Image 1 (cartoon, rainbow, N blue to C red):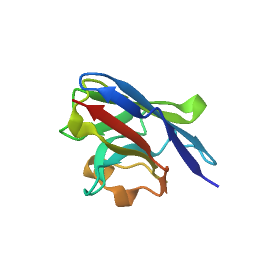
Image 2 (image 1 turned 30 degrees about the vertical axis):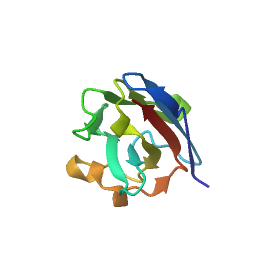
Image 3 (image 1 turned 90 degrees about the vertical axis):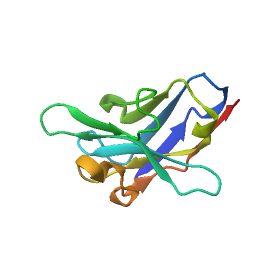
Length: 130
């Protein structure tokens, strides 16, 4: 059984940082796509960041425009864990953050499509106060 478990959420002041972790079990995601999405109250779940195996020894990463330059996605394949480093947080970043795992590699705009991900975590709350 595949499981994704997020951690690292919490309450932080604007301008602060948090690092979210997503520990996977049941299968490896080292050669597929993994991403982060978020959902604020009353809003649709939206893409935040994702990375996918390029097939050439590196990962391709993509970010939502709203987080570019502030958030960084990374992974530790030995630990089967993906991270989201969030810096310069703003109140608009407040949401439940979900980790997502794909069963294949994804390319280009497919990375941002939540329907392309087969596995989801339960979410972790991030609250940024002004």
